[in-house]
Image (tube, rainbow over all chains, first blue to last red; front, side, top):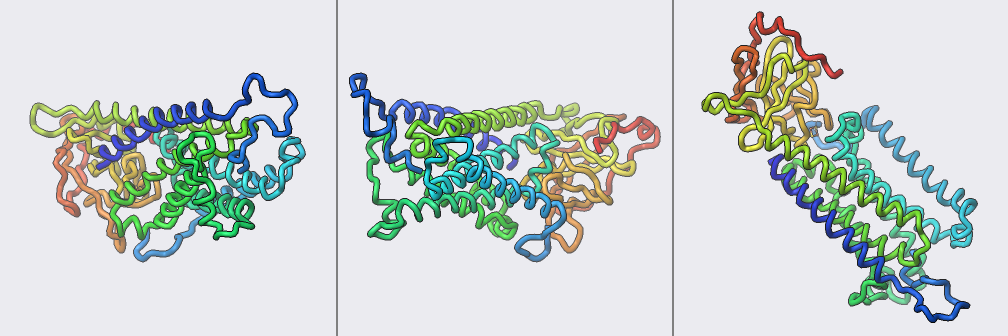
Length: 54
Length: 362
Ligand code: FES
């Protein structure tokens, strides 16, 4: 019982340790960026999106 | 441990534990709301309702990180054991803080929604096909739902009603909640790239928790693998030397199937019982004998040495094992006796008893 629980635990954390960093990398790489030739003076703040409100 | 179910059986330790927790929560929120705007121009420019939702959101992440770190920390170093004692109050508090964050979000962003607020939350953003701009709120709702269910079923009534195995399985969904919180924060609060502190904390939280859980798990696996050697093909296992056992303490061995067995030494006698507490599978053998009763280090459930039963009126029971001495070696039959079987503790012979017990850990 204790052993099965420990095994499940180890499997879950191994999975999280692999999946979450990959997911974070994908998320951070897909944040919108200004294109190289974007005008220097902008009305919107760089990188500010509706998603960043909360 | 109680005969009838009361909402909470308060004692001094629980009151102090909860008081410290509440003071820490209030202090964090006050510092965030009052000191934050003084120190950070960006926070000074932010609307108070948004600041409030950020205070409770970041606090929920911190509390969840701490509550998930307590288990492996206590496995790695017994000095963290006291934190385990009232961990469920910590968990309930985390759920309340997370719910407060959600309440502020609904009250601010969906205050003037023409549709009901919850409906608007689920329907206002449907960009499921893209990573950036994904409706991150859904991860938050998912995590909050799990935390609410866990908080609602945290009482011992549910533990006993569902059985420890099922209760434990349900409560492991807190890891799914944590994963959802990480995605919720990464896709939401960090998307504008302006919250460096939260970003750093998120990575530190994830790295620390993964490392702690994996290291603690590795240690346990090594202990499982080591097992206890069988004695001359008798089926009995050699748990250790009697001199290794401190008075009123135990040494722990592992049966071939991996089940751990604790052998306690008390008043010149040895008793072997399961190392698995009937409450939440706590390591009984890491506890001590208090007033003649084995006391689990996690939440204090107690068992009699002679039959593994809790003293009346309590009804908890754990398995007993046969124990023998070969010289100074402690041998145990890894075949458990039926629950409730009475077996008098084994007296240690005078000459063996002369060997000093290991110094007691306190
Ligand atoms: S696990 Fe809670 S008292 Fe043992």
